[in-house]
Length: 238
Image (cartoon, helix red, strand yellow):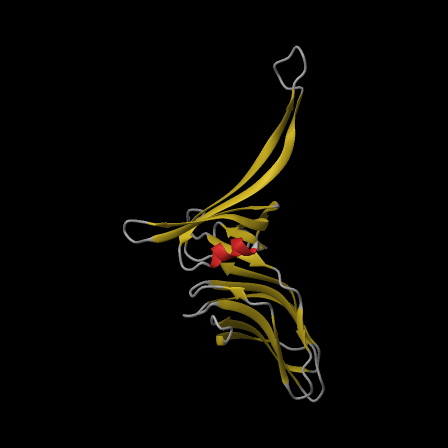
């Protein structure tokens, strides 16, 4: 039996809005989510629901990898069944020289214009070369005493804080820039990897508030991140 956590995965998670296309007759159209910063070797794992009408003759999901100038380096495509509604999860790894990632729908119409839509999307982007991650829940205690007693007359739970800290090998200034930009995103921890029935921990709406870089004597460059979310969910993967 594997030790829980040996295959642990750590993702930053976003929830793009619905995207759709309506290509004219006998033509192809594409639409994409906003580009999100990635580094080569990171994995993008996307869960989505796809649908299209009978006028769509070909339908694909597209993992599009961009360079620093915003031009497409390469793409991975998934062939889907037109004129149906289904949910699925796909995963691909960023190629060399990748700078950002976007997820899209590509559809082709027959003799009449059709419509295709991706909804309920969750983009999970694997956090680089993570060494350690710590998630914690801190709760203030409310204690009130009355005369004549050294024991609290009121003892209850107060304000809660949901903290996360991450140590990882330095690749780029991506996370430092996220702190400067004030970005919020979920951090998802799969302690035993992906699979039905395995645990899943999600810190919601995390704001990173600390970034530190260290250079060791042996030349290893590392970075440390700290942040807080507004909630934490302990779930089991479906």
